[in-house]
Amino acid sequence: MNTFRDWALRLATLAPLWWMLTTPSPAQMLRVDGARALRHVERLVAMGPRAAGSRQLEQTRQYIETQVAAVGLKAQRQPFRAATPGGPLPMANLLVKIPGSRGDTAPLVLLSGHFDTKRFLDRNFVGANDGGSSTGLLLELTRVLAARRPQLNVWIVFFDGEEAIGSWSDSDSLYGSRHLASTLQAQGELTRVRALINVDMVADRDLQLLDEDYSDRTLRRYAREAARAIGKPSLVMAESLAIEDDHVPFVRRGVSALNLIDFDYGPDNRYWHTADDSLDKLSADSLSTVGRLVLEILRRLEQEPAAGR
Ligand SMILES: [Zn+2]
Image (cartoon, rainbow, N blue to C red; front, side, top):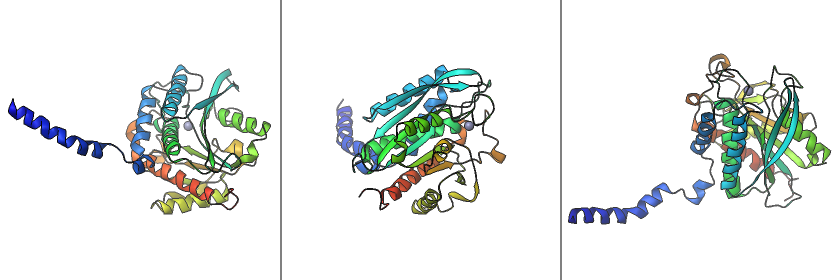
């Protein structure tokens, strides 16, 4: 009995130490935590395939809304009907607007990615990297930016319907990003957008980002500089390749955009759009690397002379 009390007291004295070791410090809270981002991806993958129009994608939207609310922000739905080769399909983007410390008139930066997965009959396709990683990282960036507050206005944008319903074409792909780009243009808001930074397939253990060719030259330079700044000088590949992704509808409307994508997923990109796109291929480190890269690029945008300082 006495021994038990003795031990209980000793444990009680250790409690503050335990608390210090397990509770993240404020500085840690402001850093991108790849493990947190990966946990989101695990939750999404557990829902199964998350194709546009599916029950699982609605479940994904609700998950995003809950996680955004948990950090004190609100995800706004932007619903629309997409005309697809399989008929009209209800879709909805999610927007999280984070006001910058320099006020409403400061430039706007969109951080985007898609949350849908490619529609396959194969129930084993869960899009861990393609659809999952972008969603998990954007949720983690939402948490960090809610805590550290950016100088510029930032919108975190979760796009629906990036994937083609049938086979990829200009009219069958990028439904959510085409809808947001045209809506913002119609509202005269597109001119506020200084940059769109899109992430896609960013959790591969063997992370190698493309120097993507539709992307803006200055933003590509920022990405290379940012890679050096985070101690990963060879993160952005030397050779370039053009990839149609959610940034393109914005590029076509004159917005400077950057696509951060690792399009070399497994030997000869073999895991892409197959049941091999599973959690075991992903790494928390890769997610934190891309998150840190995005924040370094954002810092460069905030340092631009025209950024309303
Ligand atoms: Zn895809």
